[in-house]
Length: 246
Image (cartoon, rainbow, N blue to C red; front, side):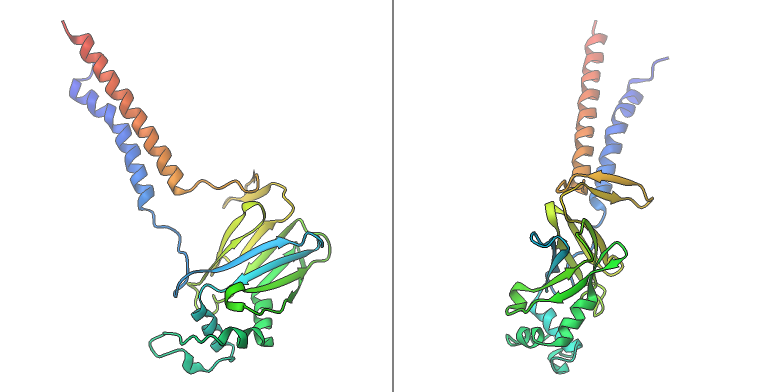
């Protein structure tokens, strides 16, 4: 027995409305935390030395100059009164040079940024930096042999505040975000397909440089599906109306 026209209309529109609800729910999901308490995030780049396949080069740059001053205070390289009672930081243009020339800073970076080739630890050497605030610091890590995949851990500044983040890039468009509790990431250095591990432990090969599917793509797909279903349901209603005419 055919459904009354009112009920058929409700059934025809239920699916697109549900799809739109899913899209709205995706849009409502908050974005992952990014940046750090005082401005732009730290940046990290990871690459293999073209001339020395056993060397991994990591370049670290602080997000903002006030963060560099805060680090200098925590290392005892700058006076503590440079951090004011309200939390503001008194940055001075001489701070980067003072910090860069210190062995404490070198030891800090080598402790907080580590590189490993499997179970084998790579030995890091910090290059001299003449423009720490602008160009950052470069560390060359020498591994026991030519590297294919390395694990790079970044824990800089999260020991001062867990809200700090570091935006990292690698060969062939690889990207990662480091933060407290997410301080380790595997990098493919020789151009072969990367392997993405899911939470359940399965692995999927992904060509280097292929971007992941984000929330925007999911929402766009959901809206396309909803629009298609709406068009089909409206066309069916028009055809039924024409067929019912005397």
